[in-house]
Amino acid sequence: MTHRITKAVIPAAGLGTRFLPATKAMPKEMLPVVDKPAIQYVVEEAVDAGLTDVLMVTGRNKNALENHFDRVAELEATLEAKGDTAKLAKVNESTDLADMHYVRQGDPLGLGHAVLRARMHVGNEPFAVLLGDDIIDARDTLLTRMLEEQGARNASIVALLEVDPDSIHLYGAAAVEATDDPDVVRVTGLVEKPAKEVAPSNYAVIGRYVLKPEVFGILEHTPPGKGGEIQLTDALMTMAGDVEGTGGVYGVVFRGRRYDTGDKLDYIKAVIQLAADRDDIGPDLRPWLVEYAAGLDTV
Ligand code: UTP
Image 1: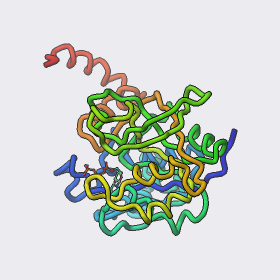
Image 2: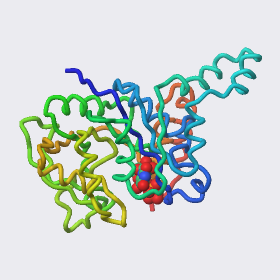
Image 3: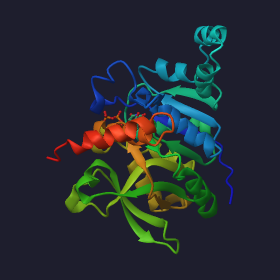
């Protein structure tokens, strides 16, 4: 199965307060995961799934994000003069990746508000949303499957991860019904960051969405919700009821590796896991890790 979607929207305008002071003057999406900023993994994932038109929603401190995907003549010239082609290739990797576009979100009024800023660029076609601080391991394909389901069902698609009941309050939680596909559920309700006792399930919404353009009209009329922010979850809740023929919402259940680099602990795990798996530093890191871990107390 193939899909015809070409546009990806990457919200990266949040304040990143969980990562202060690192994020005081730099977006959290620029934090390096081994040797690449988190945002580059996300753009690479979009491109690998065939989405070469990328709109990034940026806020204050946007310069680092824009510069990362642009040429750096001085650095390129210096490396060229030295004949350091390996490092030059690393510099150019992010420059030639995708057709990059940017829009500002003046005030970080919530994820729903950030997505609404993409309306003019996206127009009247389905599009993907990838959160700029959420990394899906490149070995575990998720987005391609979601794009295919969108085409097949003509609905909006969210990614769901089964989490420990003790952490469901950190996510949007979905009420679901089974379909005849064990990896796909119909979403009948959504609650943003529910207490464990009232969560409709342990299915957490993670940072990948494939949305129908009707979401923009709904977001426009979505009042601020949890935390005073315009929540994408609230708009999806409306769409789950299939109002105005939006086609409803389905969830693709993800069973692979995912790292929330906006969370300190998850960020550290991401760096360790991805570094340990790499051919260049993995062979030196793994034995050191084993030795280090052997000397650790678990409490
Ligand atoms: P988060 O809730 O993780 O971002 O949003 P945050 O508000 O920056 O985080 P903390 O809690 O203060 O640490 C998920 C994604 O949505 C983007 C963020 O940049 C992140 O990629 N976002 C969030 C926006 O673009 N605009 C917003 O108004 C809020």
